[in-house]
Image (cartoon, rainbow over the protein chains, first blue to last red):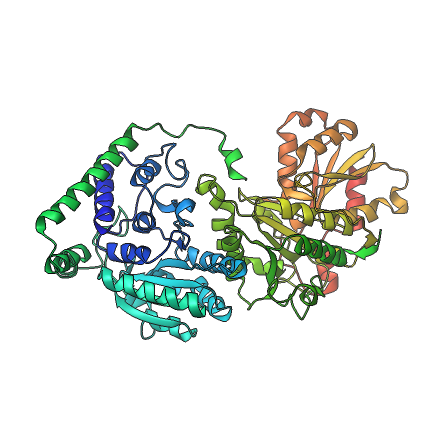
Length: 306
Length: 327
């Protein structure tokens, strides 16, 4: 899954550089372990809410790469028929309530979805992805407070990639840590290595079990790092290339997991097979989406209301 | 038909919704034990319990966001903003989320929710508790904005809002809460056919007054005065200010050929200016014998002192003078 996410986004970069994409996008290259590890611990019926940097969450929850490419290319087969684009893909059939272009925009939505689960007495949770930039928004605090008061089945997962656009979390987040903000609302909270896919999976799985047995929200701060700029306009003026290189060389989630797999006895040949099959999947999805028809121009005012 | 105040009529409608739809619930500030700041939810906690009547912290952003998330996932929220001025703290969930998700996700989700709030001036509540912010929401594609003026249409419009699959902003003017009338307690409709339909609340021949919310009552009082007894004035109550029922206005202007619009809100980018622009840019322009006129609140925050507040809100006398100047 991590490889699928990375290759999906690298393919997007290539399409962007060829001028095939209209609009910007926010890539999560380097952060794949949080999306892959967290979604693996969920059932299809569990829901997620996602962010502007949400391609990984979407794929992790089971979306088809073809329909995602098609969405970014404005095709009728895209998840939102070209109305949403990179920042607004929702895939209800797989339990993805949608990516969101507003920082912290999905926090309160996840609380509402969790209330539905509580009222419907369902054995499922809502996993709410958000970034470090979201934790200084008022809605973050309102959402955590209410989720804790009402004991709602929501797992807040902060992907702390250490920068809200150019603003480092060091300069923008007061107090001890992001995780400590969860604790301050009486929510069990931990900080984890977000680039270790197994740790992410185990933390999410274990909190999910606790939510289902005892109820209540939980909070994970997963520390990670994005290699690419915030969006396509970013010149990386706020961090050093040494810093980026350090994370790429020493902390890369895919490299680290491959290392572990080799140690556990999986052969290099098996890994190569996996890589070539994912590459094929992406290549075919790109081709299929480029061959598919553009979304027709219909009366968009009619699409505005249900 | 029981005689009810508007507040009681809304209470009856809420109660009917909760009885018939087990997935529906109400959330908001002081709506439980307190019964709502204006008493609208009085008695509902006892009847439906705290699972369905949910008192929230003072946190409008999450109240609205909660409505968005729950409406997307199979429950039916009706949330209260208490004073509708507080809706300003909930703009992101309403404007960026509720209004857009259906379109943005290519029709994959509906967001059927109602945000109720008490709007308008006349109670000396001053600048932060007296606004008529309905126009803000009319500007946002994806929302419907409903503005009842009396017990019967408040009851009916709320039921129709509930069966509509879209996010609804339901503005209840504070001065209509105490208005009493006999109310026909209709059943929950199958479709929201009343939304987007204006009502001709008084038939007349000489001039059309278009209004909405409590200003409809001010207009009615104005034309019932002795000054106006020899004139035949048509009153159109918009009932829904987004979408606006322009056809009913056009039909009326074919007959009266004169248009006056009255609203409590300030004029800039408002419901009234929209009505007038839609009329003058269309065929109806040729029907008009005089230039249309808009009477609106002053472009000032609402003052607290009674005599100053009356100065900001259009009064019966202003309406009478405007009508006379146009006849």
